[in-house]
Image 1: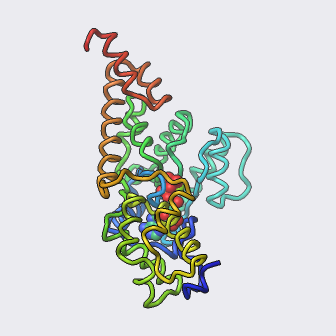
Image 2: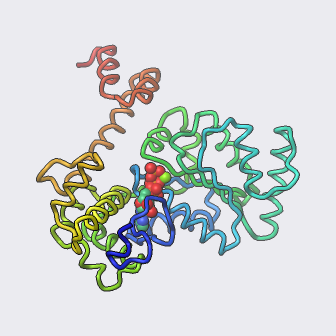
Image 3: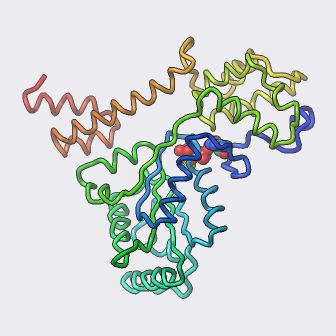
Length: 330
Ligand SMILES: Nc1ncnc2c1ncn2[C@@H]1O[C@H](COP(=O)(O)OP(=O)(O)OP(=O)(O)O)[C@@H](O)[C@H]1O
Ligand SMILES: [Mg+2]
């Protein structure tokens, strides 16, 4: 719609995770390096977490491109709400195994043979699970059992769990300590910092064909507003910038003005960061997450029953209070 007006050849701020638009922040690069290293060195179990919209699915897609180049076989589960039988069938089939057997035991045997064969040929297989915070405890147990497929020296299947921060909490729970002990690498994606937000926007505009104009479309004052309201979350940056360009086109404005950013935020009904706390949002979020995790831990220590309830409601403070009263503390 606005592309021609801004001299672009394609849409710069699509919401879908397109690896061609990958912007290499230090954090994203480190996470990617961890995942690639973990798979190449057959570390077995790797966990990547990050807040909503920070680029986890994009990283998986980027990683998949690297796996294809290095001829590592992979299965990609993007919706983990499956029964354990369907899950097993799905991964075996996604790995390209032919003539999949129907019974569970036969399927497992077939899977085992497939992995051993791959190993003999000097290759390995990776199981990539997105949205892993949605995994049921039944499937998590299934996955733990899959890590048992190994030779005396090597893990035959490398498993990457990717999900929102609740996944960390799940893995920290007492019931899953067996699974947690098997995690070889754990990393967390953070929102972009100020310099990266700027670089990210310019890079996307360049990749969309803006050329030298990439630095001028969002002047300093507009960038500040985007930084403030997006809190460095790439998906929010995309949504704000895309709407701002639609707005700019309607107004025939070659450079986006700060009031346009405010206008699109209202249109998008995006949660607006409180005034005057430009970069504290990130810290608040991180602190809140830390506090929540600590409260979950306390609930867990006080009473496993309450800990389960706290996880369900997502309000650990209330449950901790109840548990504390129960044990006579105030
Ligand atoms: N480093 C990056 N470079 C380029 N684009 C990025 C980067 N990180 C995130 N994005 C973009 O931000 C948007 C959201 O990314 P993505 O869908 O991967 O987030 P997510 O962490 O998987 O979110 P959710 O938790 O909702 O699944 C996508 O458009 C993606 O392309
Ligand atoms: Mg995602």
